[in-house]
Length: 323
Picture (cartoon, rainbow, N blue to C red):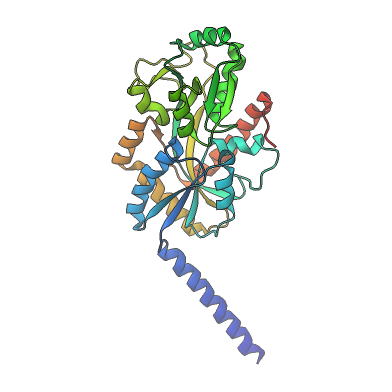
């Protein structure tokens, strides 16, 4: 009798393993949802849509974008961390999430342990832009302008603790000025207020403001990175403008819950990397002002750990915290 029970248990276990293996092999069999934890229209949203469309073609299933803005990306991240680890709900996270690991005193998730990085899609430089009513045409002139309008110059960002926010605070420190920070639920609403004059300055992710700059609605003063951008050749780097220490960039990557099966992680990572390598996707990302990356899971995961540590040092130096 005992022998029969052991045989039955073994058969059940084998059957469950076979089912799990079959589900993993067949993945995906239904739509994949990418949670974008910022407002629609910002760089995070746009890059997710560009890459997601190609991933959909490669995997033969719809890839849906679900914007869940709030708490500097933490609301959407927590939702994905608590979702079923089956590969059907993934997170579009950014350098902001690496910053949040130190910025927030209490977080209900950890980027390096509750998630597995699938692929780093792209990085983008930050572009210092001003409302056209601001007379400054260079970062040095912005310093003069800000001092002449002390307490009346506001700079916006897509949220407290974003790379754009910390770049602005760094500029304040280096220049000895006091621009006041205004946090938004994403880069798109910040840009809207910048054009409207509710705020005067923004250290923006380049894809968010490129079209407005090219249309003359915003004035660019300087860009982060070692070289000028091909689509903005007349805009100097911060180093050329005398502020070499201002060199922050934002990155944008896809993550799955940590318990997601390894074969699913591998399949997603491979499809995403292949999507980013597509010539049409690369052309579109370059057109937006983003630098395509598209690496594999293991490489990206190591990068994320390093980023959490690197930004942690900068956050501690800035003294910024969020309860």
